[in-house]
Image (cartoon, rainbow, N blue to C red; front, side, top):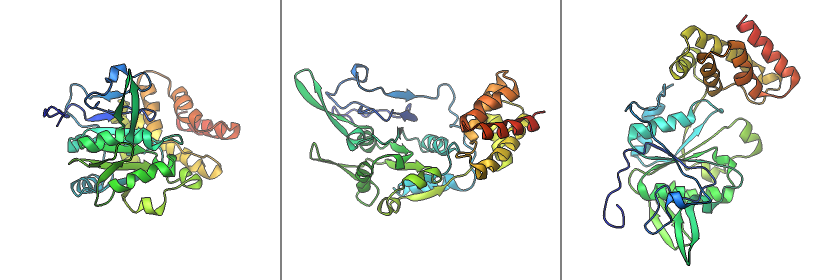
Length: 309
């Protein structure tokens, strides 16, 4: 409900993403500066026009049913899996399926608690409070998705704790307000347990507040199906790309820090579908993004030549 008693219609906003640097509320509070007038932040609204079909997601197991039960029981969810395996698409799909708005925050080292909760802004001769994306999600019953959450500072992550237990509250120290989460609010976080765990990790006191769903690259047939669906390339091309990806993933033992993801395969397939020669598409979209090491690049390009003679 708005301050005037009017209910806001959230149905068009199935996937609302906010850049991490924003201090802008997804829906400005009464008296707050309008989105168009903000000079220090940009809000992006993603709508899927025309079709009522959900964002494409091919389930691997029972993750859809588990997420629905977590949402029903007001449980926070942690998604663990390698880069580009479908974690973000899964959240988009579930937000559509549950008919909840989705606010996405990409975490980084400089993300502060104020970036999440909000801050006072100077407007003309007065000071106004502006909700951050987390506060906006709590007030409006949205799904708040923190992507790569371990990249955020520990003192920032701590503000999530009251939202992940029986309290489901967000204290705002600067205003003295304690907000009860609106019905439908859910906190979802994700991270890559591979390379990130070697550098930083979540504290046990944080990890144990979430239901953890493990993700990985899909089996070959399913991955090929995803590539065909997303890009429109023929099935045989999709299967060949997956076969190449499996060969490249085997190079992880030879020093490849990150293996090719399903996302990279889809990007490569998009180029092929638009007429770029297969080998050239593989070189620029699949091989080059993975490494700058000359020997590794040569080995990967050899595998491309073997797969697409």
